[in-house]
Length: 195
Image (cartoon, rainbow, N blue to C red; front, side, top):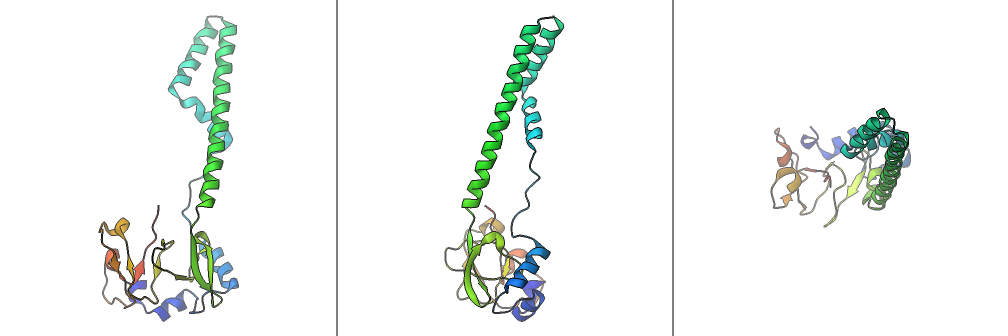
């Protein structure tokens, strides 16, 4: 368990140092562990989105009406109803695709930044570019963008109400915890906040 190991052991295990990662290590770790982001479910194709437009109750009623109209040999009414159904599905598909594209662009704009030490220099990177072995610098008011083990701390308190349910901020420490303990009592760790 990482909370029971010394900072030197953790740095060694993560192939890092107090100088942070170097570019070749960042590439290696990113390829091995992936990006620091939640895996999203597979997106529906435009064809699937189009077909989902026919699941609405009113559309099903219109399809039933077109069938009855067709069976009673009212061809003009049948074609009009089918045209309305298809036009509705096309417009719904276009609107859904536009809104998904808009949400993706909003997500990219709201991507948090993180201060890390890489190549012995303080740098600011996108939170999804964090990788295992990065040294993250946290200051008052920062949003935590990944789980991590504290290497140094000076009177650090973290709000972990999303994890523990406690309203009060929790004191963090770099002291090794020798005994096995629950997540909420691991004072050497800070944890990702998913918003």
